[in-house]
Figure 1 (cartoon, rainbow, N blue to C red):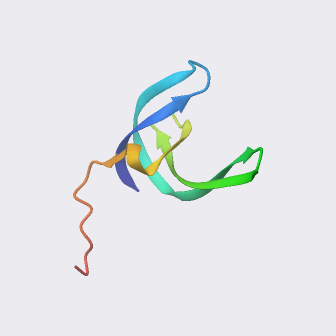
Figure 2: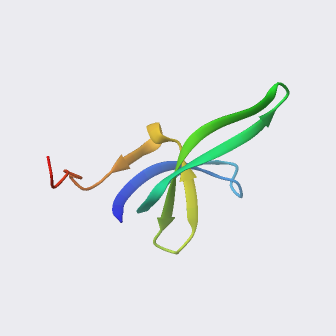
Length: 71
């Protein structure tokens, strides 16, 4: 798993918080709207305490170089 830093919404605090942890994978999320369902992509991140967070792709920064071995 790759180390990441992300801006995530904390439902308890009702504000954005900075989270450091490990990236698990990309996932599909949705929100029900008046006109139907809106789909979007989120990153699944596990912090040092084992709490799982989701973050939008623009709010995720990978902390390793992340170079492809085949590149």
